[in-house]
Amino acid sequence: MSPNIITEAGVSTRLNQWWSSTPFITSGVTIICAAIYLVCLLVGYDSYAEICFLPSAVASHFQVYRFYTSVLFHGSLLHVLFNMLTFVPLGTELERIMGSVRLLFLMFLLATTNAIFHLIVAFLVDYNPLYHVSYLVDECSIGFSGVIFSMIVIETSLSGVQYRSVFGLFNVPAKWYAWILLILFQFLASNVSLLGHLSGILSGFAYTYGLFNYLLPGPSFYSSIEGLSMLSVCVRRPGFILCTGGTTYGQLPTHSNMSTPPSALINANFLRNISSWMPSRRTSTVQTSTNQEQEDPRFPG
Image (tube, rainbow, N blue to C red; front, side, top):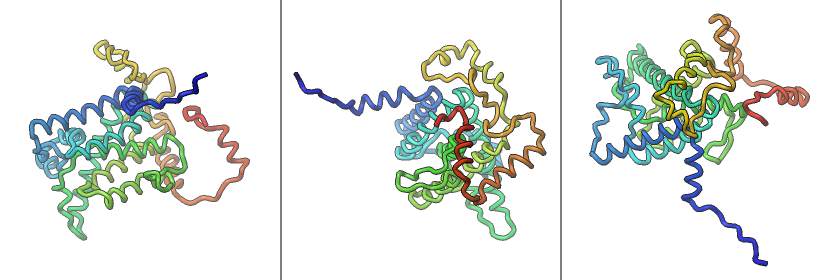
């Protein structure tokens, strides 16, 4: 009898399996960012001052297009490679939870709000009466990392985990995970936009705390888009995930719905989320087991 032979899949096979499991929008954004960088590299385009997010240009010339062009362009191979390797697992997880169309709308919303936060903070720091820091309004920022930081905050909130691993070296409380990464990248990498990443974190927490609820459409909006005949080819693709048929995500699922009055939203949800940052005593085993029985069905186990 011949001995059992166990063979491992090659690198190319594993990459194909990994890429084939990536949903439609996540893979599409990855391809677009990589293609834009490749085209810029081939044609020798390096005029990033024309497409980067430049607060002074946005404010003086109302160049709103910079909100979105700055997200899709990258300055180096390492820049685009690292951003996309970070984005793929995050986008895959969120797209499976939210659906393809909803994730696309979320990234558009985050790109917009990140830019608005970036503008506000840059000009507040520049025109504050105590100490002027004028370089922030003239700082040229590009890359998808601002949206990635927002997605890190949102995915951490939805997952419900208590701790997150930082580069596989040590664990930190999940609520501090994005802030730890913000600090580490400032020390470990050069030419990193602190304000761009900070704006992403602020947008992520604003979405998590339900402050963007009134900007998010209901399930019927996503259903109507999925039903468009021109998108039927995309909808039929294996990686496309429908927003209908499961838990609706017209707003952040972990917070109250739109029927809650604005005052109640601020007084109850917002204060409750802020209080969650305060240290609390360890609960008993009986209470812990009760909470586990009432866990979110979207996250079994």
